[in-house]
Image (cartoon, rainbow, N blue to C red; front, top):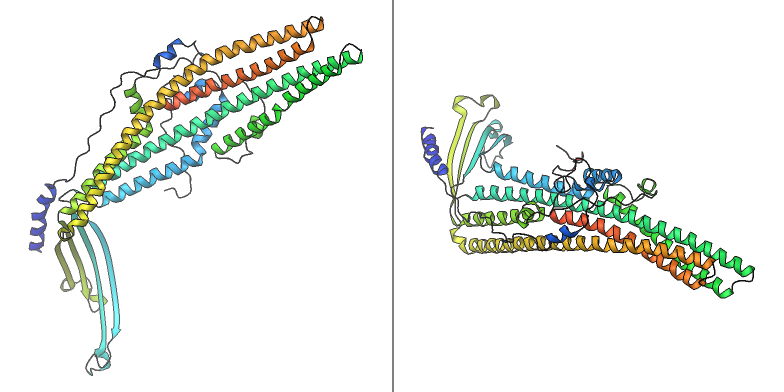
Length: 488
């Protein structure tokens, strides 16, 4: 026993002084761009709606700044019930479980075992011994322990890679939250925009039906022509033909919102059928600096964590170039009668040092190291590409939002002027100053202008949502609610 203790005492300093092979992770440098090229475009925009009380439109939950309680309720439900988020959360939980498993390798593995045997040898095996002498009994019980001495950091690098994988999955979960909230907000805004276009179509159908009735009345009075009646009826039918397509798109948007919130496609039809105005445009937006953006973007964080993990795996592979020491021990009892177990003279013990070294298989080890090097090079390129795509995404979102707001202003004025022109055309037609063609043309122009204005306002708000997605600002930090299935 004294020799066993001496062996352990001699090996402990070696374990404590162990080195860690493989490269240490160094965070790669990011582009040195100081400002966004199109950030100044936002300064020229007219002010949007004032921020909702208590909501910072960049730092807090941005959808609340759009001033629509129903949208906020849908987002909250999606964050709690969306199945894609549950999948991402399960991946995060799995990475955490694997990290805990890797950490256990840092400590001795202790197991207990017991065995009882009762057998009889044949007369040939026992050389003619009598029956009782051919019976054989054996009982044993013991505690086994084994511990890999992590002298060259294989286990430490494995734990480091596990931590990086957890960080990557946590970032993936945040990215999934960004995507789901963005989809809910965009789809909801599109739904309200489609409903506004449907209202415009119905209003124009009503106006054009009145015009048709007027033309038919004039025809019956001998003041019109069948040609005018056919033209008025053709325009009415053309306008009415827009309604079924808009109704279909509205149904699709309702189905999408229901599935995004974890429900069956028909679940929200009753709640969303009633038309409501489009959400508010957010107040002034500040994209910050590219450096701040890269610190916020979850896809960049995930790519960096995977680069960290790939670097750690190089150390795991490199450790196989060195011997692997395993300290094992046994403390137990063995006897031919169960009542004799655990007596002092039945004690058994063993302390052993095992050495496993793959130096004879060096070609395979170096091949694995080369593969890990290649994985790290790919992870670095992936990180760098993710950074560039994040900057590109934000620049595009800035341009799209600024141009959508500018287009919205022009089309809103065009719709207002078209409505005035249509009213004047009707008045002049009633007075006999213009013919029916001028009225129909003014009504057609009004329909197109009102539709374009509604569509442009929708794009302005959805482009604001896209800008928030690109800036990765105003997103929740909390994890979605875990399913009770399989919970710990």
